[in-house]
Image (tube, rainbow, N blue to C red; front, side, top):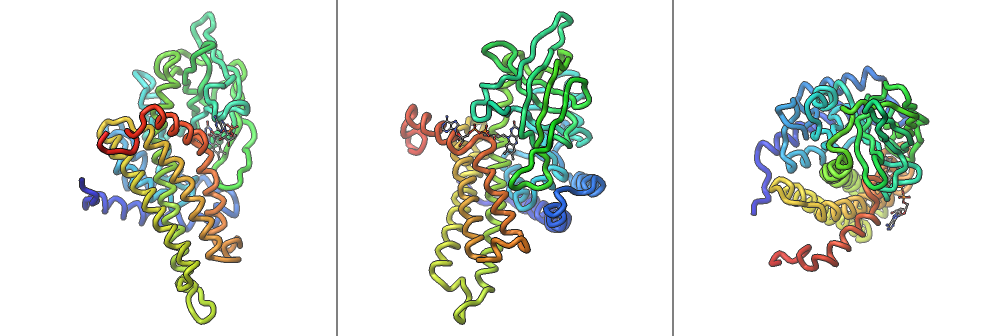
Amino acid sequence: MNFALNDEQKMMIALVRRFIQEELSPLEDKLEADGKLDDEVARSIHHKAKQLGLYALNMPTALGGGGLSNLDRILCEEQFGRTSDYLIRRAFGNVYEPLLHCKGEQIERWLQPSVAGTRTCSIAITEPGAGSDAAGIKTQAKLNADGNWVLNGSKHFISDGLWSDFYLVSAKTNEKSISMFMVDKSLAGLTVGKDQAMMGLRGTPHVELFFDNMVLEPLCLLGEQGQGFKLAMGALNVVRLAQVGARAVGKASHVCELMLDYASERKHFGQAIADFQMVQHQLADSVIEINAARWMVYHAAWLLDQGQDAREQIAMVKVYAAEMLGRVTDRAVQVFGGMGFCKELAIERYYRDARIYRIFDGTSEIHRSVIAKSAIKKGAVLFDVER
Ligand SMILES: Cc1cc2nc3c(=O)[nH]c(=O)nc-3n(C[C@H](O)[C@H](O)[C@H](O)COP(=O)(O)OP(=O)(O)OC[C@H]3O[C@@H](n4cnc5c(N)ncnc54)[C@H](O)[C@@H]3O)c2cc1C
């Protein structure tokens, strides 16, 4: 067992961290204040990140991506957590793994441009009537006499939906099965609805989508009919580990560093507040929990790299890392006192941005239920190394 990072990994982490510090962090306050950035600025950070080879790190090199292992990708995603969601999307891309199931002409039309960053994609599964129960969707795709699919229904909360050029949409293709479709924004029958204002993640639009008798050619179907949903849900496991687990660790680490600095500088009763035991408890608990979450994330990534099924470990990461981030940001507000609540500092923003981690990509309750069901079925296998 070797827990050490190699020199290449350390260099990669340093490169990503420096890029975030120099190019992205300076944009955060304006993004927060205005809720958007000029498209030109967005294009510029995309271009700079791409030149450094930092775009689509999770995609294979044969397609022009970074070709990173799951563990190396996680190390980068942890750094991504140090900046805002919108800036991560523009600089580093958000190329969803399910697109790797594209075949033939689909590769040229959807996968390759996504990896190159000339087209962007959102994933559209959630509906007003179906969130946690992702199989309970109402959106339907029916084959017509010409062999095309006709799509009807709606989605909501679709991240980055204004920016995206196409959507990966789940739809029922018969009573029992669900398929995934690649749906171009430019096609007739699609309406992008309102940008649903959120508590945090300023800058990233979250939109409604309405499909009204949209005609989709057969090529738009991802995977086999009735199988695409399974493919997509499987591939989204790694997205959960990266975009929730690893980013939560990165964000919490960043917040904890700020908390440690502030506690050391802020003086009361003739001493730094870091000298008070009750403040120290908050610092210590944050450091303990960040480290625990980090090793859970790395272990799950390592399991994936060994070709193992890490579903349960990723469910555990999803719950623990998301809730850890909530506790760390809450402590940060407390340690910063009034300044933690005041918009002059970013602490209140980190606190707001942390809240969604327990909800998206499967709520804590849903993942706890997955873990409990597996534990009941498999027993000690989930925690006893000798089993
Ligand atoms: C900012 C943001 C970005 C998002 N981005 C996307 C996106 O890009 N694409 C996309 O498709 N979706 C996206 N979503 C949707 C997100 O994945 C859902 O909000 C999430 O899955 C929860 O679904 P829901 O909101 O319908 O809540 P519900 O499913 O209605 O849940 C409400 C409550 O009931 C609990 N609950 C439900 N079922 C059970 C159960 N079996 N046991 C115990 N408790 C249960 C939940 O845990 C929760 O506490 C986004 C949401 C937000 C807020």
